[in-house]
Length: 534
Image (tube, rainbow, N blue to C red; front, top):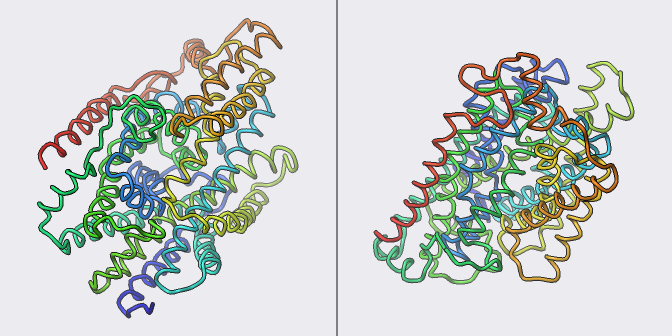
């Protein structure tokens, strides 16, 4: 199809604005540390918006409505757990990483267990992030192809080049501030799409909602005790809570930006913003998918990821397709830039600097990090093109793929934080056992994928602890990088356990974070009430 002048102007303005932000911020980046984690002066709210925009990618903009088009609001159960997730991450993970002053969070694994553990964790991150980034590239290229007719391959390359330009120039500062700009476009675009869909419904919205309720499309809380159903309240609040804890707590891409916050309090506040914002954001995306089911009468689509694109094209509203394209590009760019930056940082800090050039100059590491950013940009093009064979929700597909790996992360950090006797040799046995168990569960049973993290993480911890006792025996003291070890270190050194009302001690729950639990109860009650009142 041919873009209108208005649509093209909207898209071009968005692209130019991103490049200008990257260029302006790039002039101030002088060191590898600034490139990796920023200046240390970034406001907490900007970091928080960046965290939100990074995870709410094009997969959410296209994949969440596609998922809800198939399963209704039941799919929202997978994303109800963020208050618990953020509470756990700010209590256990952030203090460890922030206090250590590292650029790569996987350095923790080396300090707790050894060099092999660090290399494995960083490698798992690079593999899983490469796959997820490829999926994001594909979702964005799908939009570009739909609007302009450009082949998927060329669209993937064009989007990659655009994201690489400003990421390579500005590093983490460019990532954060372009994320803020992109978040405004992203959420504004989603609201415009929802309002337009309501106004253009073939029937009054009240009648449509009544039909959706009768068809079971508005049921978000499914209390069924069946582990083969992926979207029950139990899979959301148990299995996917552990899944998302690893996504936000043990993921270089998510944590890296908080390491450059002004204080531990600012780092935690940036994450708390996600704890409160996640539910309304995901409700918006899934509700759009449910409305689309009412708008299109539930008719099947060859590729459900194109539902929102089809609506924008058919609506006839001037500029709507351009707004949608800019919103999807915003969703993708925020995640792509973060992914390229974090993958480059992990590659240089965990491998190049650790094993090849240990004592090079800072200017050398800055140059290598920029080259590694370009390298990973080229690599992720391959999985992006391979995803083109997928026709279901790309968000659900990516969640399934990620579920194979998060158990190892959960197990390695769980044992690191809470186990006295686990050593590296036993841990590695546990990691391989966890992968074997997940493979068996995925191929030999009907258990739904949201439970894979719990199963894989549990197997990793049980086997890892047992193997450690057999191979190395009991340990006399707690590791200084365990929760009890950290508490002992703080007590012995007399270091302050709180700064400006925020705990610096891992394992201590901040009073401000407890409101998240009340918020979770309110959101679940609100969903039940919403269905009852329709």
